[in-house]
Image (cartoon, rainbow, N blue to C red; front, top):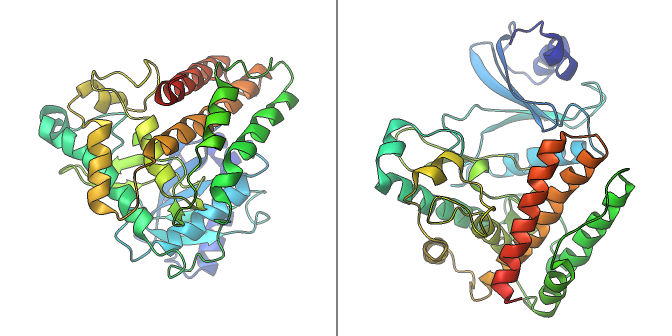
Length: 355
């Protein structure tokens, strides 16, 4: 990828970026070593060097969605607030909340992370040592416990999100999201067995109270980078669904997507594990809960409820891509795959509630 690549320039104007960086007081110089890490239908990540320092640029997808810019603003706010905490995250550099600067897209800069995605590949150390892989799973529980322990008010996030009534809003909020997919031409509607049953169970068994905290919102193995020299989580990435809510939902999300002990996935099809899942040796979901309990004072008696809510919410999120695919706005193969994952998530939920 070169700075003159037309696909890249469509997403990132390097002249505008350089001028904006000058305004931020960042080291001057020409932009070099430009590499597109991710882009297209997902959020755009571009790594580059300038003034003797490396950066990662992040903005919304090529075709911005209605809430893409708000998501980038939220990400930047939370990453800045996490500076100085023990939560593994990409170092925040600077943000541009004004979408008029870069062709309609809000963006921010962060520091590159020296780490690897375990769902894509495993270095030799991690591939050949089962004990390292087992500890990687436990460190995933450690990292999310650390996030849930951060005092969000002290971190400057007292006005971020709406924790009051967070749990009460969840089922209605996501059923409304599912209903909104009817706007996509060609989408036949949600064909999800057990949808109403799961929604009703969640409403009837909702925890009566919770302690608010920072939530990542999409916590699973594909959103973790691990250190090359051991089992440590180098960074939690992709913070677009972050908010102030009930941090136990992050643990439920991890459990809902956790690869099965056979290297496969919960409910036969669900799980975000890739290379790490295929290698095996990961802790069980019960071990993850016990590890979290060792690192957190939160009451885990109702963790099944949070796992069911995670299945419900994530399944509806994935169904959105299926709906867009039916309308020709995403690859059909991707839409079909994600619909299958949605069905698996709801099957997992039904197995937990006994119906």
